[in-house]
Length: 339
Image 1: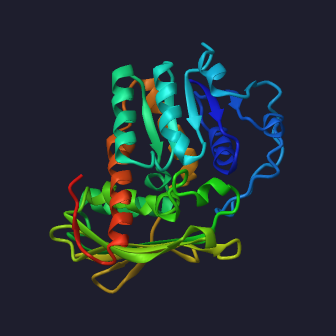
Image 2: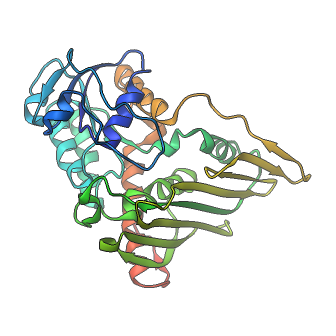
Image 3: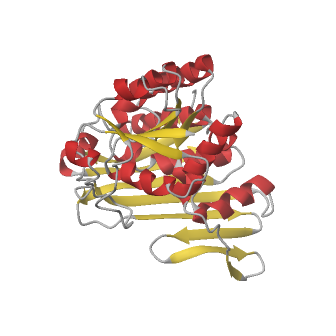
């Protein structure tokens, strides 16, 4: 599979590092409107994951494009990895699919359910692979939770809390524009919203409270997702002022026969069972981003659609995020989830 990397900002750089470990995938082109980035100078890129990034890469052997049209017209490119501002996800993904390219697109899928549905339809009509980069589905610390839910080995689900926090991003001013980035709920908590969809599907109803002031770098929400038979499912967190506030993600997942808890702030994924024992869980050795892009590549080369990260589920996650922001405006009022 011959790949073009579209967008060389924070997430584009993260994906570039991940692609290095994928056999059967060859990076053949990069696309950016920034001349410095096209020469491999990525020193201006910053983010919130505390991951060591390369500041200078050798792009001398790659094709370089300043616009996507030229890249899509090239017959030597089979797939594109879109790491561009959120409001560009849908139009560029649809353009690439219609040009006969397979598409991996960063989360969130889009800013509206209608655009997500159009992306899904286009992929189906064109017979191409479309996958949204919901990396949490591949993240090591979340695999025991996914496995416990899939196998039922810990019994029935009882109560779940997903929390994710960071400083308001300063590496892209478009993120503060709700028409371009959607704010913290879409940029950050979409991870946890999508995990709820992955584990439980869509809820019957939702309610939410919080506060939003994107100009001040604040976008907070505490959302209750109502699922029959589960005591509570809560997604909470958001942007807490710019620059200095540290990133963290965590979950507490209680089943009938045990609780799994994880926090990136220093508590590894651990099972606390009904017998009162604590067991630190063995995690996959592969980096989540590397596992994510490798899975996409395997889907393209095998001609199979991404069952592990289905685009229709990604569309549901976006629709649910839209609903949660609506519920926050209603300040705790429960609203039905008719998506």
